[in-house]
Length: 173
Image (tube, rainbow, N blue to C red; front, side, top):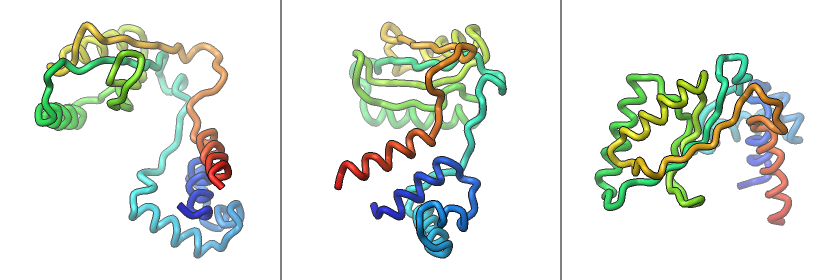
């Protein structure tokens, strides 16, 4: 990735509402270069969406949770594809509390789900729903909950990630 592209992505992560003129000033290039680069990065899938991050407490969430689980043994890739399809269909019909579901490895688990909840009761309903999925090993579900009412060191922010991306780029050189 070119330096201009990385700088543009990082500036957009900090504030995607800025004009191309402001972005050009921030990264030291021309406005037409920013416009062309942004358009190309969108078409190539480097930029997936533009959004904002609310204060989750103010919009009604009390808890954020990371839930870890394992798949049942013997599930085939074909069965997993069917489960993903049904999950996407279900997500279209109802509000799904999970904002991220990924397969990985660590802490003795292979799935991680990040979710936001209005209260503990909402969280428990989410856990019951997860345990109803036919591919989840119900004996392996563990969660780490965080109260959003507490004062924390750092909240979710893409500005911090943008700074880190620029640091990584400097380290590679």
